[in-house]
Length: 202
Figure (cartoon, rainbow, N blue to C red):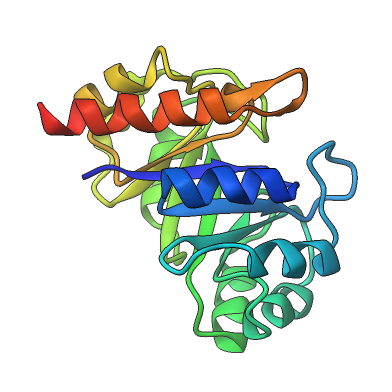
């Protein structure tokens, strides 16, 4: 079964919707310049509203390993997702500071990007078209991946069945594709989850 991640949640009503729809993961964005930014204190409150069984992922860009590990070790988040220039030494340092899983995001433009992602020391990799660009990259490049991955970039209720059918990723990650007027839409969240679960059942 394809795992589901709703990213960029920031309100109590987002947590309520997630609790009803039961994705495998939700994401908090700890990037101050992002319109989806939440503070660590706000994330702690929101995490407290989340039912057991849904893991909270913190999204970071070029934060220090110590800051990330602190949020992980305090239980504010269960996993870290790195979207910046973090290199292999950074990932290993973070893994020394915490036993929580690390996801490293890679912008996929060429086949060489897939090769680099394949070799990452991160526990999981995420394949994207860019840092939250909301566009789809060339899925033909993914045929050379040989490890489980999160698929992101321009996914929506309309195109995610094709992604699941064609690629069979470990997980799919969506943010802008489940928004309306800049906020998470429970209707779109439900449609996204239903589309994946229907495809998985075929």
